[in-house]
Length: 238
Image (tube, rainbow, N blue to C red; front, side, top):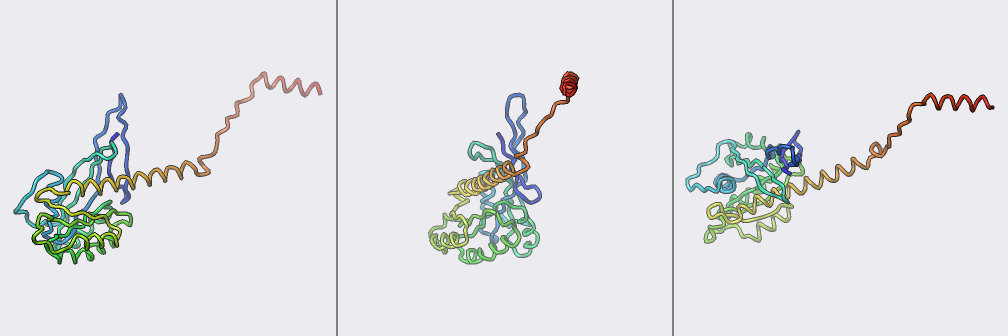
């Protein structure tokens, strides 16, 4: 089976396609968004390119507006395809990028472990995300550039405590040397998949147990001529 990762009317939907004999299996296509947000220069674009193309660009320029790429992964034996949206971190693009929060099913909130100001701004990014995104969005706090250990300005324990306080998952990554990049994306996509799957199972159970679904159709066959004559004889005998 292939599960399609999509957003329909700003709600997550998963559609299973049959791969049985005689049925052509459909491709994993969808428009489910996972957004990368955070200050300019924290490495969002390189995280995206490392995950989707296994590339890193030392001369990466600031994103203008919004860019996206797709990648499929396996979760519980199912193929999941997601769109990863890289949003500009500069203030002048804020109005454009905030529009992409609506309908997003997941977000990676990125800061630079070597620049404390980018971590301080996480709280503002988080507020903006929660103001515009769906209440059920899955959020992961990502401390990028973990290869800059000698320049670390944000202690791991401090960031982890902030994540726990705000019900976020947490990981440190390096787009430069690939550390934890796969894990970050796969972890958030897996969490989204399982949450949505559980919700759909619960919704299906509630639908199956509703009073309207417990009604049994009763079929009454038409009266035959033989049955009519029997009834007449019965009445005549009286």
